[in-house]
Image 1 (cartoon, each protein chain N blue to C red):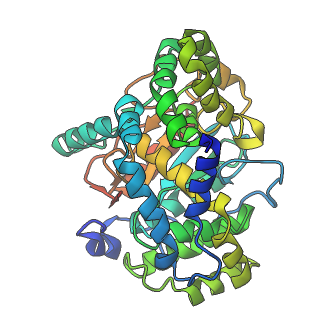
Image 2 (image 1 turned 90 degrees about the vertical axis):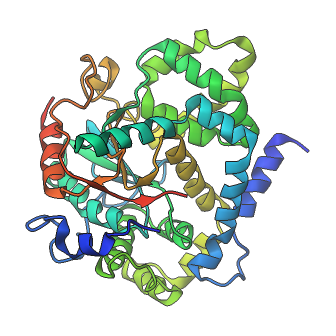
Length: 212
Length: 189
């Protein structure tokens, strides 16, 4: 279950005017043109060797992950040589694990495109994930060049489920009790949850990565 | 039956059969069932006690609620002794549960490769084989470099201590000012 006041918050209580979130749909971030097949590890938005790194434990059914995601994507987009974002899976609601596995059917920009599209629906629907039906997921997969068959293959891939589980357990040990969980340089920045003042948070994160 | 086989069987059990309905909730049922089993296991509870950060998070969240400002938790293991304690504390339970990759991710988030390497001689001999599983898992990170935190990228700042350039760590990252106001989030399970 999500925070009780989610609807009022999503209705505009974040004070997000002017941020990437305005317009309701999370932006589709730019990423590496194609994932290097030799590269293992979590999905990375931005340059893999950027000197600064955020790690985000996110849920694909969480409206607060949906709110923070475009903010982080814009920071990466605006600072391509300085900062990257690593995605870590942290399912929260009953259908969530399968959505993470579905996202792993894609690589590089298509992974981020699928994640962004799923979160955009959760955001647009005020935190409801009921519209993420098999048919809708197939439609989202096709938008990323995939297919229902590709999703089915992902669902049957034990390695993808294990990848989600590995991240989820790591997040538990890192102390993530609410999503989104954002880490930087060994600091857990959202231990109490995502700041309701997202504009202020965005500014503070940008000030932080400008240092050093 | 070997421990490796048991871990493989557990991983395979996470994946639903191909003919199962494709409803995400149905597909996810096995994942949550597996989590409940893990969560209730003695090994997991040991791991939470020895290396988990949930208690610190909850404490920080409580302080944040009182102060009206965001809580920041410094998770870093900055000395070889701290990293050795982490690995020694986690090794046996991580191996028994087959969660070396998860523990490796946590270690990579909290310590630099340099600190981890310096910790190796400080680990008691009986814990070294299991601890080795954790550090081996770290090499599965991006481009073969360790996991997430500071070590996955070859950059001079990391060798000096990380994003913060080796300077003494403060209560928050340099340049970051915790914002005022409340917090929002979806509770974990």
